[in-house]
Amino acid sequence: MKLTDKKIAQAKPREKEYPLADGHGLVLIVKPNGGKYWVHRFYFENKRIPMNLGAYPFVSLKESRQIHLNNRLLVSKGINPKELKDNEKNARKQELLNTFEPIAEKFFEDKFKPSTSPSTWKKIIPYFQKDIYPKIGMMPVNDIKGVNIIDACKKIADRGSRESAVRVCRKISEILSYATMLGLANGNVANGLSKTLPKPIKGNFNATTNPKDFGEILRKIDNYQGFNPIIKACLQIMPYVFTRQGELRSMRWDELDLIKGVWIYQVSKTKTNHGVPLAKQVIELIQKLVPLTGATEYVFISDRGRGNEFISDSALRNYLRKAGVSQEQTSLHGFRTSARTIADEVLEVNTDMLEIQLSHKNPKDKHGGAYARAEFMQQRKDFMQQWANYCDGLKNG
Image (cartoon, rainbow, N blue to C red; front, top):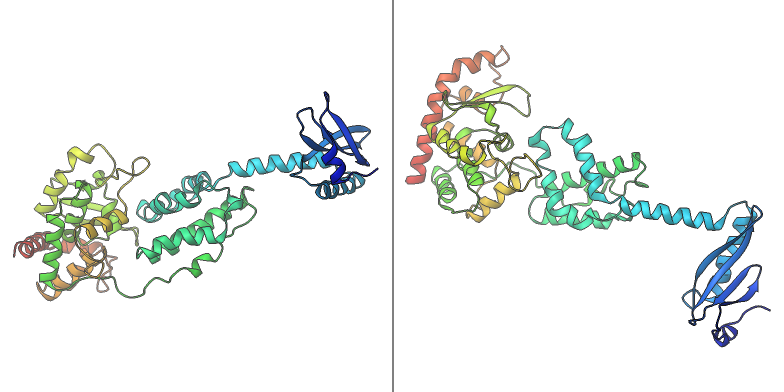
C-alpha cells in the first residue's frame, strides 16, 4: 500500500531500523532514534543501488515521490541518478573553490602586468584590493551577479573617480572572460556593465592658473603633517618637474643621476626617452628618501602594495584632500597644466622649450625631437631652477 502522512506519523521507532515501502523502490527508513529518511533503491547495470533522498519531513512525501519519479526516468534513459547527483555535488564544490580574487590575481600576473606599464596597471589594481575584493573576492565566479559588480564599482564612482570606476568594471569583464576561457566560469556577467555606471565628466583637468592660488596649494602640501613622508615628497616634487603624475609615481632609482641633476625615463605615451633637469630643491627632496626607499626599485615605494610596487594615484589624491586641497582647486594632472600656463603667461618662457619639457612633440622640429631636446637642455636646466625658485617664492609670499 502507498504511504500517507498519517501512516508516517504513526510509525514508531524500534530497536532496529526498518523500512516503510511506498512502491517501486521508494522507502522510508525509520531509525531507532526516531529519525525518518527517504531512500530510493534501484537497479542499474544489474547492481542494486541505494540513493538517499533526504530526511522527512524536510523532504515531504510529495517531494520524495517527484524525486523518485525523476530518478526512474533517468534510469530508463541509461543514466545513473546517484552518480549524476554526486558529479553535480563535486562540480559545485569545485565551483566554490573558483572564487573571484585568486582568478583575478592570476589574470593580473599572467595577462595584465606583462602587457602594460606599471604606471598603467597601478591605476587599476589598488581599486581591486580596496573596493572589489571586499565585495566579491570570496564569491565563486558563477555566483557573481551583475548587481554585485555594479554595487562595488559604484562606490568608486561615488567618491568622484568615475573614470576609474568604468576602467575597473571593464577589467572585471576581462577577468570573467578569461575565467570563461579557462573553463572556470559559465559566462561573463560583466559584459557591457560599464555603460550603466555614471559617465566620467568630460572637460579639462581641474587646475588653477592663478599664481596666488597655486602658491596656496603648494603651502598646504608643505604644511600638512601627514603620516607618509614618501607620499608627501612625491606631491612636493610634482609641481617642480612638469611630468605626468603616473610617470613621477613610477620613478626608479636607476633612472636618476643626482650628481648631474637629471632624471631620464621612458615617456608612457610615446615610448621615447625623456630627460628632466632637476632643480636643487628636487634633488634635496629625493636625497631625503634614500634611507627610506633607496634599497628598493622605486623612489616612491608603496607600503600597501604586494611586493615592490610604487604608490597609487588614489594615495596622492587622498593626501591632497586631507591637506585641504579640494578637487575643484586642482587634480593631479592639474599641476602640469598650472605649471605650463603660469610659466608661459607669467614668466614668458619660450613655448617650444615648454612643450619639450612637457614631453610633447615639437611641431617645428623635423628631426624627431632629438635635436630640439639637445638644443634646449641647458636652457631647460636653467629654467627648471628658475621655476623651482619661483614656486618657493609663491609659497613664501
